Amino acid sequence: TAITSIIATMSSTSKRPHPASSQTTAAIIESAMAAMTNTASPALFDVTIICTTDDYQAAYWMGRLSKGICKRSDDASSAGAYPMVLAVSEDWSSASGAGNGLGTLYAFQKACRVAKEKYGVDLAAELKDGKVSAALYHTAGKGTRLAPLPASENNNKPGVKLPVCHTLTDGTSEPITVLEAVVRQTGLYAASRSGRLSVFWGDQIFVPTAPFSYVPTHHVDIMCTLEEEPPTEKVWKDKGLEKYGVIAVSSNGDAAQVEKVDHATAMRMLKNLGDIGRVGPSLGSFSVSAKILEALCEEFKGELKAKDGKLDTDPHFWMPLTLPQDEYISLMSQKGVEDDESRSHHMRMTKMKDAFLAANSELGLFGAVDVGSNACWWDYGLLKLYITNNLKLSEDGQDADLLRRFFGVTSRNMNSEVSGVTVDESACVFSCKAKSGSVGAHAVMASVEAEEIQIGENAIVVNCVAKKIVAGKGAVLYNLVSESEEGITAEAGDVIVSVTDTEGSSMLLKSKIDICGGKAWKQVLDGNSVSFEEVNKQNRNADVSAIEKKRKELFKKASSSFGL
Image (cartoon, rainbow, N blue to C red; front, side, top):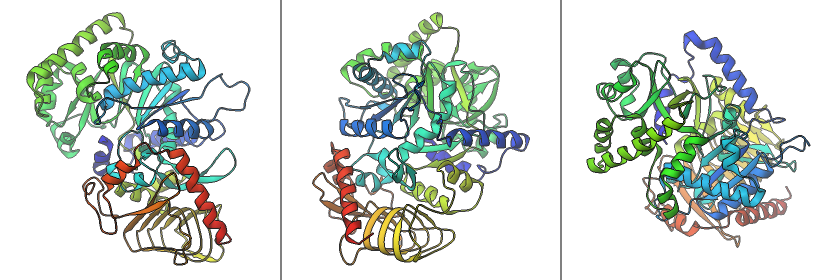
């Protein structure tokens, strides 16, 4: 996702509020944190749509979210079928998928059918009447850069667990998943978006430093981190904006998008906007009015019916809708797209736009939602960032304080029985049981049970049970169950996960913390008998609900055998 690259550029400034707005920033952060951590009355969209890889994952998320984060209130005044969870799979004609543009439209249409069948609700009509807010979370994909963790969840990438627990409706405690954290965080925007469909990616959470409560002024609005300074050539270079998709906002609030161009090229492409007030990297997430959602579904009804084609929002929706034809053709040629193809697509989108705006001029076409150039970001889409942001739970500083508060961490040792274990004061131990051993500095553990543990500094251990667990410095252990006498041992920098099938058979899959799963996807790494790619193929259409049930049974059986 675009934000992954942005983090590196922003990290040096992300903790420094802009001097002119520091007080306002503090108030916005406080307001956002209060809303995101209000478990009694959580900020949620009325309708939560999850776009998954297959039907087993869809069934899993319908069940898990409906009973958990999106559970309906027992309060008799709660509104009928809401909050509603609708999970659908992207069963597109080609393996490469629909792209996030057609994929959004297709998932929404499938969700509308499920809403009708399951709840008797006409979702499109409810949205058009402004009665509900809806959010769609894109989670489909292999998760190559997070490998081998998604393999351990049988390709259910959004089900990757974080080393911090939350309490379920039955009172038990277990690690929260990445998607559950994202749903909880993005609910901030629900109150402002009745009658709109919001679209988010399923692996990053953030705390905005710009107001999150707003009145939409455009049929499409896209999230971005707008710079405080005007877009001079120096600002463009200093911020490295030529590396990103950039949103430019004029003084009247209208916006346009360019991608990976230098300052001079951007200014030429954006001349139709007029006076450009602010610019900043796009985060990709957006919201659309029910009217333009309907218009897009109508425009692409041929592709949607045939489940054919691949269109992404940035190059195929937003840029042809906001850039002049010649500039669009020039920009797409850099991506290797033939001029005739770009010209034809731009003409198609312009025809749709003109007809749409003639009938729906009450809002502008394309605008921006600033989340603040100093927003705090926690991305879990790469193994490296998964490690960095989870270790942050054990660190000091404002960013770490906010992360702990978001996850409800009030102490570094919660719901654990580890009185016989020497635990470093900086380490985090959540819902763990152990009789002896030690936990090193800044290690983070959740849902771990063993007779003896020897956990090195900066190690992360999630959902593991064994007689003895030894994790070297910086090691990552995930979903491991062992009843052997020797238990589990990981050297410094090892990543070890378990892949379980519906029968309860398991295999270990190994990597190192400095190996990018995307680059090593087709390789058979040391200690493995197959590649990550091969495991992904073996995991396809796995019944993730049945496997999770089996994994919990195996965990409980092993734990009981050690008398824990």
